[in-house]
Amino acid sequence: MKALVKAEAAPGLTMRAVDVPEIGPNDILIRIRKTGICGTDLHIWNWDEWAQKTVPVPMVVGHEYAGEIVEIGSHVEDLKLGQRVSGEGHVVGHRSRAARAGKFHLDPETRGVGVNIPGAFAEYLKLPAFNAIPLPDDIDDELGAILDPFGNAVHTALTYDLVGEDVLITGAGPIGIMAAMVARHAGARHVVLTDINADRLALAGRVADITPVNVAEEDLMDVRARLGMREGFDVGMEMSGAAPALSQMIENMLMGGRIAVLGIPAKPIETDWVAVVFKALTIKGIYGREMFETWYKMIAMIQSGLDLRAIVTDRLPVAEFATGFKRMGEGGCGKVVLDWS
Image (cartoon, rainbow, N blue to C red; front, top):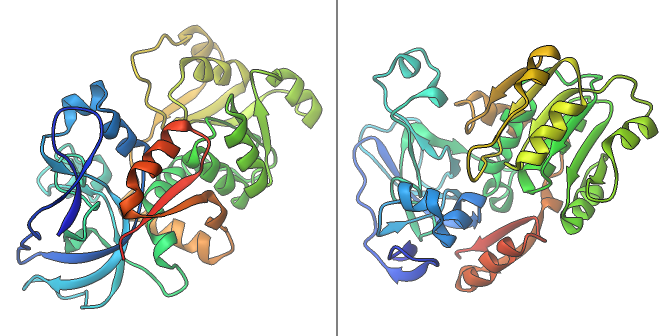
């Protein structure tokens, strides 16, 4: 089969022929139809410090996908041939305290599809049946291929109660924009999304009923006054991994505010812990998706009217994968979806 492979310890990916995976009794084999390019994939493409420490070479990468089941292991009973699926990208163990308590997203033995084990940028993917997410008929393959990052947004956004709250989101990448859409869908009052990338802020303003703010041009205190906010933001979601963004968020939270952090800094950053303490802030780190409650919530929100379609700005045949990664690296696009048919 053809697959996109991190073939050597250097930037880029290579399209090459590899063996179709052989499944075990508890696995399924998925014929991949569409895949999304993730920020994690861009890290792997660039072969940055994190990727060098994390990804074995050679490795078939990719973890955002939709396809159909073409082979089923002998012990699998609740799935069927021809069924359309996406899948949870974190393959967990079952020995840890967290896993045995059903908190699978906290399992320390977690391995990432397309990061630690062979991934979905290929014609076929081997996946534990436990990780399969059946796709309803009203969620097509394109939407199915971006459910994984949408799940990051949903997990982050639903960490705290949003009804009637004023929400600050830092980082207008695709996940930040999706988190803003979720916050609005869940009943937040004001949703402010900040960045310094004008293209992504413009996209956010087109696809969601929110307030996009270029913090290189406008002060958040002025935005708060314009919106009639008196004390600060109730809920913060840090999606950028940028040190100035987290500092700005802490500065603009109200007393007792709550912050969820998904963004990963390129290196350790200093934090104003005096402000955190004296404002009595709650800060929680977010990793992946809750298995499998987040998946239930995200599918339900799409079915109840949250329209993700506009977040997809680039649709390319897989042969043009290099163009897709170039678009991602330029930072002016939303989600990039590759067609494997």
